[in-house]
Length: 83
Image (cartoon, rainbow, N blue to C red; front, side, top):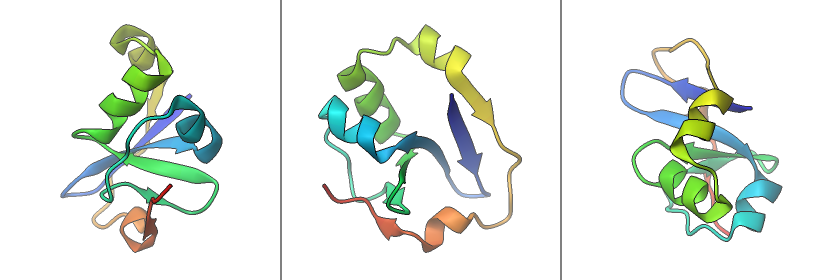
């Protein structure tokens, strides 16, 4: 399961850090982490992760659970993900 979080300006997909590292995907500084989860930004990083992990778009659609949108996401307060 991949949770999708969004606010009025952007969206992120929550993926465990271990899964992102294992995929070998190159992730931009526009994705964030709390140390356990990487919140992959919706424009490029989620696509890079899915491709590197060998997950098809169809399979990904079946894995995504959307969380309610908020005015300002807690994700914006996290540190940028850096490998």
